[in-house]
Amino acid sequence: MANAKVYDQNRKEVGEISLADDIFQVEVKPELLHLAVRSHLAKLRSGTVGVKTRGLVSGGGKKPWRQKGTGRARAGSSRSPLWRSGAIVHGPVARDYSFKINKAVRKLALKMALSSRFISENLLVVDKLQFDEIKTKKFVACKDILGLKKALIVVAEKDTNLALSARNVPGFLVLDQQSINVYEILKYPQVVLDQGAVEALQERLR
Image 1 (cartoon, rainbow, N blue to C red):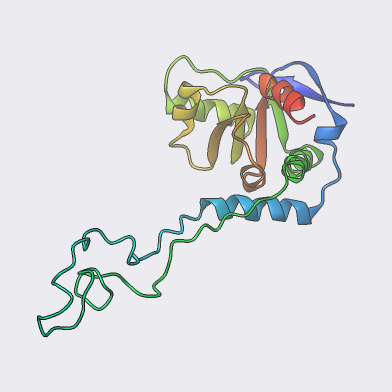
Image 2: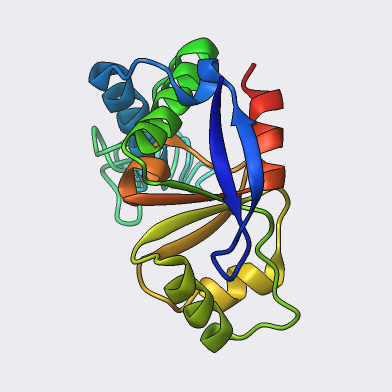
């Protein structure tokens, strides 16, 4: 079991924490990481292109005229594709781009992403990141002290003050440990975990 140094917000060493080998020292397989990233990005696609078919166009429930005796062609609905304001035939349909990957594979890919950051020494553990108020200037000072340039910050529970303080700083994202994913971990070259997030992840991913 590997150990990682724990720092405070002033980059002073305050202790050590044990990191589980089956989470932070997993053999990295690029094909699994690629699959997890593709799945994540596919879910983000909206697939909003689409037209209304005959069953989706509102109105047209009443028969425009009687079947016989008018001299006109038969018509059962004013929403026929032949009519103005009618439906569209064989038009584009809204599509769901997402695809499923097994839960075990998704969990393993998350372990591999965390392992890749730990093995490359781009994972920093802090005891707690906390701000008394929403202040971007305080966050900028804190990230400079910690030596962060572009990082994903993972906390145990949602922290509004921290998230809003970091929101306007380019290259930084704050997530709670339940919301992290392979794509975000790989997107940011540095990952910062607070001590509570490490404990929660080790409990959740085992």
